[in-house]
Length: 475
Ligand code: IFM
Image 1 (cartoon, rainbow, N blue to C red):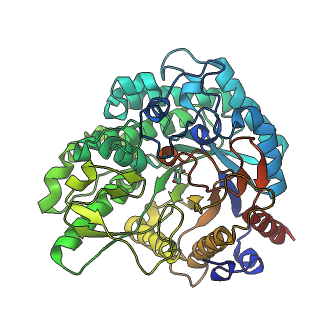
Image 2: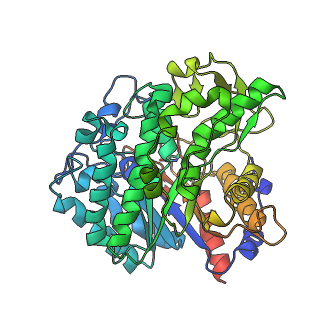
Image 3: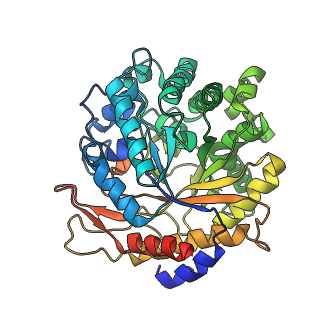
């Protein structure tokens, strides 16, 4: 992919509506390091990363980008970048080491200072309350398979709201609950490493319940900031025209998209096709009262878009987008490659046009119940050296970002396929090369190259590109 594949900076700048937010996103566990300092408790990911073979390059998240000690430098980079907003997550076990009970004031202080420093730099804070690092004590009690975790999440949110609520502009309750439920509890390639397949569905329900309780806690605290959630959406198509592929594609669409967005936006779980209904029984027995809690009015709906998925009936393959899983082979469907698309470093298809059609699908499905949309993550990894002496020429990433932002803006502009969707912002995933979960440091998604031995930060060509977009817009 080249820069020519996407619109130019000038074309993009002309498409940006007034007030449109340009941002960057990160997550605590992927950048902070300092896992054992200042009273932080362990998380599910601390434990998972220690299991032999869990992290593909054998690396450790202990230091990551050392952001805990370098937040000033990273904010200076964002200021230079010219972003309006920074989306970052709070480490729940840094704030509540056991996920319940006593609060670790040093942990809260870190985020309090971070918010103040961002505001001083003219950058609006968007806080994600949960980006996968479940306190280990709660994980030992069942984690998101247990209803109690949802209740603890509501309590933790109240603690955070009381300290940061006056200054945070946007709140994201959960990041990609599908990744936690599917990769973590269903397939075992992420923490906590369970391979429960459809028996993982309680982890869906309890995360959604946690979302509802968190929204209630934020509203009860009277926070002035907007409140939303960030769901990953993967447009799904059937590999063939036959009934079995179509049924499995619909099932996969339920599993990765609709069992999250339907209850959040309409207050009920989708009704699966008759033949596969027994697989979803753990969701369809959810109490009505829980669904009312889950279905809270939202100020925005966050969409993380990375790739479309093509599904065929029949099991046997072990590949998932996040790694290899033996239990994956037991599922009655598998993912089929897209030979027509170039791929990222992760092997994910580069298919920006699906972003526009996915926004169309969301509007068709939810109509007036779809709040204004923020693209809360969009980005790609490409192979890049561990050590650099000059700017990385990541022209492929520039092309990727220009094409995806261009699609999102074009689709939601007058005459576009999703012109009735109100798109309010776009957050690049991600500011810094970081700890990419089970892939360790082997997948670099950053606008800024990080040398993990020296912690040297070196802005890439994509950083300079995003900065010129931000400047062109203001000119
Ligand atoms: O790095 C992750 C992020 O934590 C959640 N969304 C997808 C990204 C790339 O895999």
